[in-house]
Length: 345
Image (cartoon, rainbow, N blue to C red; front, side):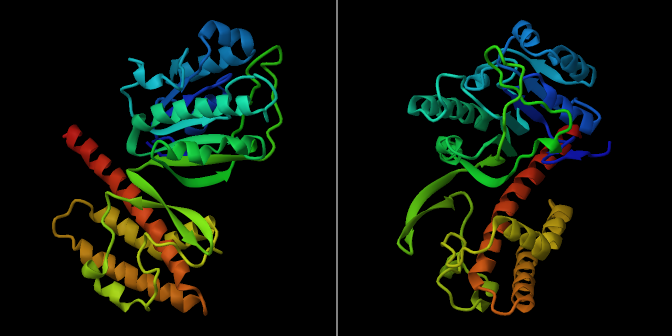
């Protein structure tokens, strides 16, 4: 079957959507994929309440069911892992669009912000245990105040969820999606979105620590499960690098002028062949992992320094950090792929 994509989502992903309004977002994904067989779409409202609130909900649900979706109602995102029909399932993507704890006063009031933060805490606590190893939790939301005061990234970090990307959320990227107020007499009406972003998180075993750089505190995440090279265990490539206090990937880069998009693109350009080769040779006992990695790092470094005069070495270290993260996620995905093949044999 051909893989199809819409924005961040693939037809091969096992997707859970929570907090759906009239189910138009779920239907948008299903139509893009040509099937909803990998979609589990859920709402907090019961079915009876749902079809009373949203005039198009019933037809959207019928279309989703005809396309093979699993539909669940009365799903509380803060308690979903305890449901017998949902809690034991695993997903590649768990999506919560425009989360809201209800209208309890003006959005900038402290007690209202606390309610919204409580909702997201409960969601993160439940969702993180429902991911496949390489899975992601996506929260799309407004980013201007007072919504920025929710501090979504900080809430996720409390549950060992690491932000891997924050990209613009544009409703035109999802044809047919109609966001709703969801409460009160105007529940079926849209609201002003303004500037929105999709925050992407993945689960990791990590320990955060604070480090002072230039008089400012930066939160640095150390991966405890992945060994970091030290002087005693450095490769020949490490010894070829110019002397620099930021040689190892857990150190803070001196240069912070590179955007995340640039770093991701450069990582793909410099190391795309290496990552593809790793995938092609995964599981082969005769494959020289150490040699291949050394060659990739050496060639990537040479290309980076050759193409731009005066490029900071710390910019290359930023790219290595991105490669490190991708390697972790790619390894987890490949292991899962092998386990599926083993079960099929």
